[in-house]
Image 1 (cartoon, one colour):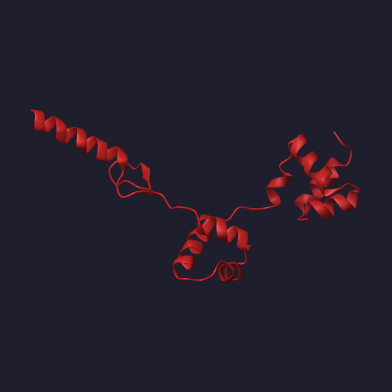
Image 2: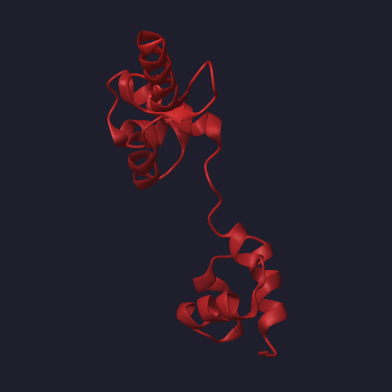
Length: 124
């Protein structure tokens, strides 16, 4: 284990980027990434936090209203790339009967069940 790893982890935890933290201890950004990946610290979790479900929902809502990706990014304070990836995500719905996710017109599982039941009723 590198002797400067604890210092790197501390700098990252305080909010520094990989590039600035690496420069402070005399290593490159790539080396800092490799150390974090190899030695399994959880410091990389703080580098790029995920968007919340609420923010993702708001992105899709603003996109449906006709705002551009850059306008949404500026309004919510996130990158245009994040807006693009969240605006493009399909929203899966849940079936009211079986609670399975589906994205088409109907839940295929319930549709198959009703087809089977109708076929059995017709033969009886």
